[in-house]
Amino acid sequence: SGGGVVVLMVLVAVLAPLLAPHDPSAQDLTRRLLPPFWIEGTDPAHLLGTDHLGRDYLSRLIYGARISLGVGFGVVLVSGLIGISLGLVAGYFGGLADMAISFIITTRLSLPIVLVALAAVAFAGASLATLITVLGLLLWDRFAVVSRAAAQSLRSRDFIKGLRAIGASQTRILFLELLPNMRAALIVVMTLEVANVILLEAALSFLGLGVRAPTPSWGLMISEGRDNILFDPWLTALPGAALCGLVLAVNLLGDGLRDITGGRLK
Image (cartoon, rainbow, N blue to C red; front, side, top):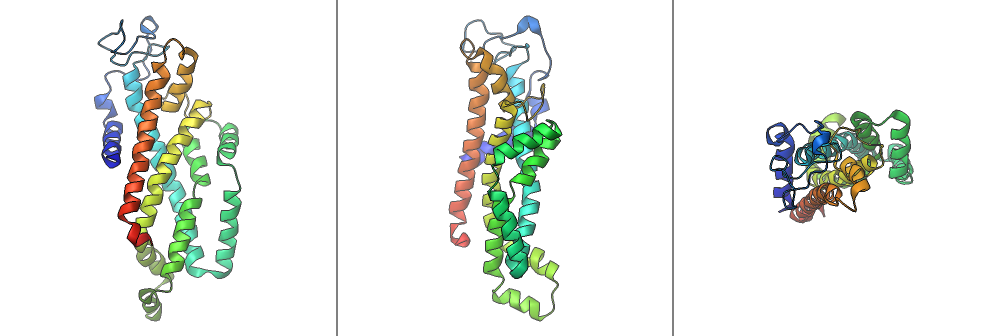
């Protein structure tokens, strides 16, 4: 079920220009704070109502899925490249390389992610590219730990010893032999990290240090709707529900992949 919801969300994000009934940034102050379809006074042209600037809420929710998933996959790509490379080198070569990289991993784990991300984004300026770069440079530790442990387990296998005996290059052993044999574990880590990144992006956007307005981010929409939470609670409830649903679906997908690959991960 989690996988189906994630696939649906990905399709919504990819097809956002076709699915969104209005421009998500178009303002119309004469039609501000229209209620959604289940509340009296709604407008059929705006099924989920409008926000405080008269922007169509359904369109902003649809484009918000694109932002959340784009940041999630972008950050995981950056952090995965860093963490997997470090983990492979540490686990395969051992010795001083392992000690140095283990120290780097320990140092990274001692840093509070949210506080460091807040400081970095505040210093560099809030933008989508900055957010992906900062989070990517902060969230590589799980990839490094998992790939290091997997490389340590695989380096003593007979097929690796055979490759060394025939003079195979270190690059081939690392990236064409070790890496494909640990893909199951890395896919699970990647899935769970996407959910973590989506929450972090929403938190930073809520605090005004993530995606800049008027870009439709679910965290930013929750932040904008909090001023009207007593009279128009749907302004925060709708993006909040979308965010919870996506994170839950991604976590369920990760749990399912972990169960499926459990035997191989052991």
